[in-house]
Image (cartoon, rainbow, N blue to C red; front, side, top):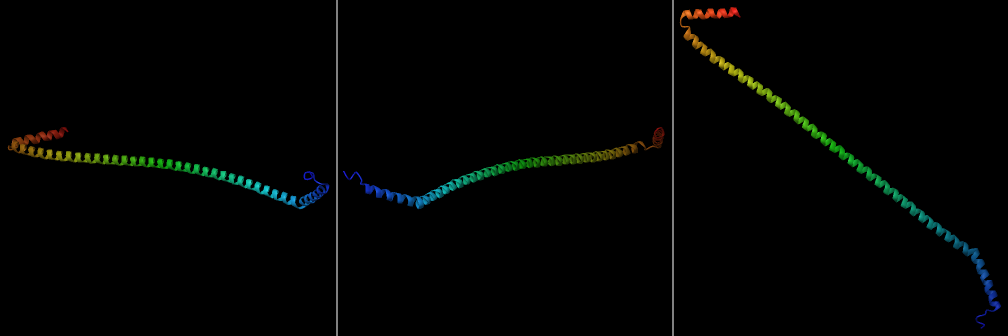
Length: 164
């Protein structure tokens, strides 16, 4: 059973070796290990912080992109409304101009028709007058063959002139 029960010398030297190892580790080992662990923790914290910053920047960039898209869509809608308004105005202006032109053409046609009617009426009157004069001339010639009829006609005309 001596294998299972250590001797006092063995325990003493093991205890001394443990104390020396513990003091060496406490003086040189643990500070380095703790320093490295602190640096690693700082590096991890910085990485997490950088990740948060990157996420915030990405979120901000997405928000700005969304705002730009909304602005662009609003401007596009406004431009489309303006174009539709201009198109409507142009159509109305074209209709108005066409209406004015047609009204002018109708007025010009009315004037032309009225002038043509007056000219035709004047021509008709001139021809009727001409025919009437020719007929009257022929009748006067036949009726005025004798001198008594001529004197009677001249007296009648002079009486009418005096009355008027």
